[in-house]
Image (cartoon, rainbow, N blue to C red; front, top):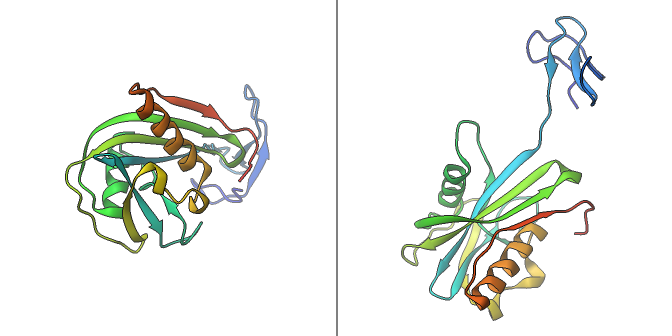
Length: 180
């Protein structure tokens, strides 16, 4: 919730501006409209032979749970650049050949999660403050009950389903109600 104008520091009020359909934070002094938009989470699903790379979270939320390397996209970068940066920050795993695998809209938390299927160039990585443990898992060894986020679970299940059919497609799903 925005309380002050980022332009002049004046008090902001939530009103529906003329010609708009949603309440926005509008400055009571300079009338600047500040738009609040969804956050984009980007990451990769690195694959080495028949195994996927997962990271054990060293930070909240979901500290100690397993996830794919990913995080918030930064201003000024493409989704692929963000996914590569996040993969490097969380695992130092060298990846290449990125192709979009999942796009999951989560309007209840104002986020969109996108993951790219990526080839692990070599089975090397390093733990980081964000990832206290990193490992390769075959499908039957994935710790499903310890996956941090449903978007990661859906992406992994979609990947394994596509791999079984040897036909890769994009999963594009909207989750309208939190069920994690």
